[in-house]
Image (cartoon, rainbow, N blue to C red):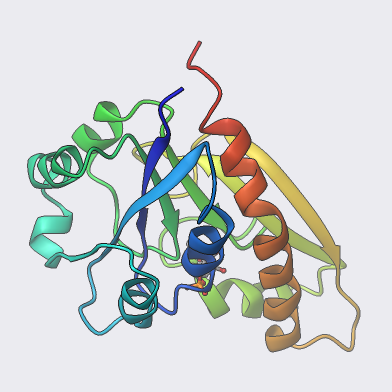
Length: 193
Ligand code: GAR
């Protein structure tokens, strides 16, 4: 079987991107072909490059241009995409070009705390303000709407009254690092039905 060629789209620190790159560094199933970012100063670009991964910076206009993205991915032989802390909307023609091959990770138990403007610490602050007793992560297929594609997997973690948005973020990140690579390995290597 040919290896899946995965592109990771990320806008920030990239701890998930780096965790996924390391997990698949000797894999027979998935190869991280490139990291794409719409932020030229994003930490993820330097970290990925230092691990020998091709990096690709795009402007916000290019990030909205489906033909540009499709061509960039095709030129790298990319067949699957992971959004890991990627904060731009994905154009619909791009979603249609990669049916059931674009996955997003979101730091809450969707449909709670999802949608436009809900990302990173904003999510954990909202979870804390609502006095939730648990939170978690959602790994889901990407469709044309923010955080609304079909759920692939969710993992939960308990929250106590002592938790702060920062400690909630740390618990969530632990789940992301522990579970995302294995979920990708399963769902991106399963033939499409
Ligand atoms: C992760 O927690 C990811 O779930 C979240 O951004 C963080 C990126 O961290 N994504 C969203 O909030 C998308 N709505 P990282 O850059 O360290 O991987």
